[in-house]
Image 1 (cartoon, rainbow over the protein chains, first blue to last red):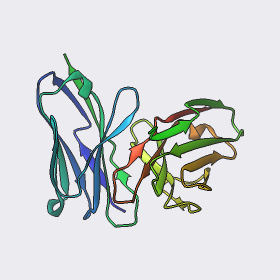
Image 2 (image 1 turned 90 degrees about the vertical axis):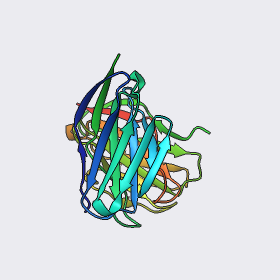
Image 3 (image 1 turned 45 degrees about the horizontal axis):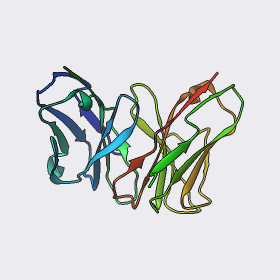
Image 4 (image 1 turned 180 degrees about the vertical axis):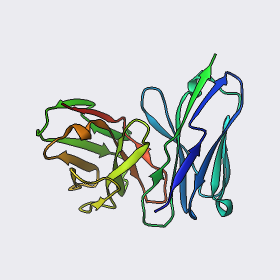
Length: 109
Length: 112
């Protein structure tokens, strides 16, 4: 099955800084999603992005399917951005998502 | 809309006991999923369902059973709990498999 790897595993930022989180996957994807798990454990879907670029406020994501990676950009980070960011992907139309191990982000005031 | 809800939020079991976790969604989604989250392991799929009356195995199905008797509910059962099943369990749902997944708040289970 597909392998999903995220980097870096941990990231510490000063409030106001920008960051880029990377997700590499081992095969072609038809489903790729980014999630944020806040410090209280709640998982929120950020983007459904099997290809192309999307933006939502200070967050944006780009998936380059032909090169097998996706990037999540966080601009002007805030303490509320802290938590774990997960990338998940699947490589066919009838298989569920496989999750990476996440990037733990800590934003310091 | 409540979205995806899970019952209970916390539970402590003794080894060998059984229990059922309930997941409910009010978004009329076809697909429902059960994951477990362990430190450093990300989320791993236990079982999933592609519609009412269907179930399928995920990555780590051993020791768990599931049922989807109604479209809005997905039950996860542990027949004989083991300490290795201590984890946080998340339920999720999606309209189709190639659609956004929405997660419940999780259930923290401890098996002593």
